[in-house]
Amino acid sequence: MKLRGLMLLAALALPALGVSAAPASQEPVGIALENWPYPYPVSFLDLTVKGQPLRQAYMDVAPTGTPNGRTALLFHGRNFPASYWKDVIAGLAADGYRVVATDQIGFGKSSKPDIPANLDQFARNNLALLDSLKLDKVDLIAHSMGGMVAVRFVRTYPERVRRLVLEAPIGLEDYRFTVPPVTDQFLYDREVKQTAEEYRKFLKVGYSLDLPDSAVDDFVSLQERLKLSGEYPRWVTNFISSYQMIHDQPVVHEYPLVATPTLFIMGVNDHNAPGRPYTTPELGKKMGFNTDNAKAIAKTMPNAKVVAFDGVGHIPHMERPKPFLDAVEGFLDEK
Image 1 (cartoon, helix red, strand yellow):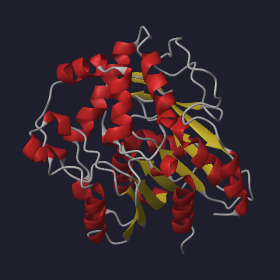
Image 2 (cartoon, rainbow, N blue to C red):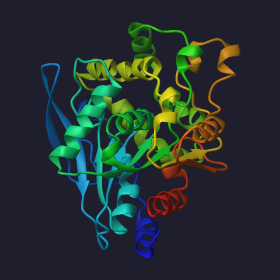
Image 3 (cartoon, one colour):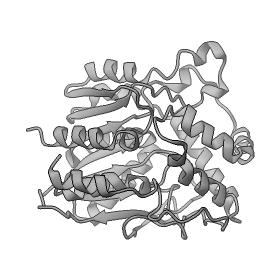
């Protein structure tokens, strides 16, 4: 990574989600995160999906260093809004990239519709976003659930992606083989009963994060303040719909068909496995071998490789920001 990007990363000491270190507030946060700060200006793409008018939020950040003529498109994970990419955006922009970081429909500042989450629809939405921005081809960087969206996108529109980076993607196994179906009501009841400390434990322990407790404060604060919104039930409905999508719409079988040059960036300690609490202990023990799965999958692909960081969990871009950016930019710069 170029010196400008390294200096910018070193200077950034802001919280993971917001843009200031203000004390936690107990004011409600609207389910479109209307009063939650993002690190860059947010724009909206108007969409109509199944007859519903929707808006997809995105940040479009111009290069701050010498432009290299390339654009990086960032897809977030299930438990995170696009604002958590702020240091990655700053580093890439400093090194000449235009960066577009979007909130998928149902997440972050985007609309929360009465429509089941669907990977094919996410792919169509993001194609519309690229078309609206007149972007013919991008480098796609996707984290966690975003990795599933990215695989479906590149399978459907391979001509629009130059290179693909999958950071700690989920969907490296078919969860239908180990986790029985659960109802929306079951998931809804679990979600609304989750306490702040339970959510903190889920992030720190479930994601095996090599981060101080304070690093997840913003995530926990956002979750608690969403609960104070009068529209919180609709937020939960959207959130559990994405779990059903993850369970019911596997992408693991599609990887051998991905010809786009692909880099997996894994945390060796990451054993996240959606749905493991809902299955038997015996089946649960077979889940979450994510780095091993990535290495096995990469061997079935025409052009893929794996970088694995020791001592790192589910969010390498926060746990090891400099090595993460070095790995991403080194891969994107390959001829």
